[in-house]
Image (cartoon, rainbow, N blue to C red; front, top):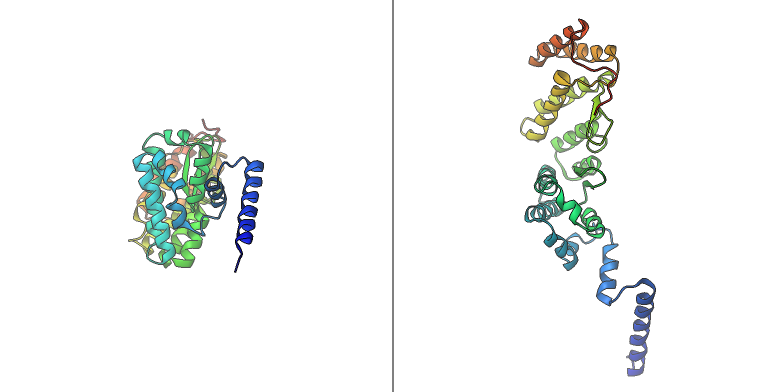
Length: 282
């Protein structure tokens, strides 16, 4: 049993250590020290504790109501997935809702209001999301995170969707068939063959899993079709564009889109096309 003198020495030693840390780091109090240390912990260790901390609650209060709700619902979906009661598709849908709340709802003003510390802490909590405000605003799913989560806890459709998605979006924002030339614009890389290849990939997914990821699959297919039908900025030469359009017609001759693509190919070969070759967008 400790004597009273020993207890006093122990308390004094702790106080001395705190005093040294306070002096050397500028931390003003023990709660401040605890918060600093807790903020350095990997978020996956104590997600519920961190989410309910006063520090994180204060950040939520500085968000718009829509953004605060989006953050908490995403975190809840993430915890449910890790507890075995949620789904990967639900978590994916929460990313889309969160993007709308963080970026579209208030035209991104939220990002400029948050301090650097608050923004970084928010980004650490939102695992599975690529969050950035450098030049342009991003709230995009981390395709590798979702693919790995699908392989651990998802369905066959989840795994296949994110294999296709990662093939289409190996990096945030730009699909592989577009080459970004500015933060906002890019050219269509017809010569790579990716438009035709990915149209086949997503058409196959839609056929095999008609009730899964209905909205994102439609959006991706629509974007591929839009580039085949209407893109006017080609990264490469006339030959590369002709080859991609001809490949689509050859591979999907009975598809409704084939007639439109064939007509565009005919006009291009006759010198009547509207496609700018070796295009610099902007």
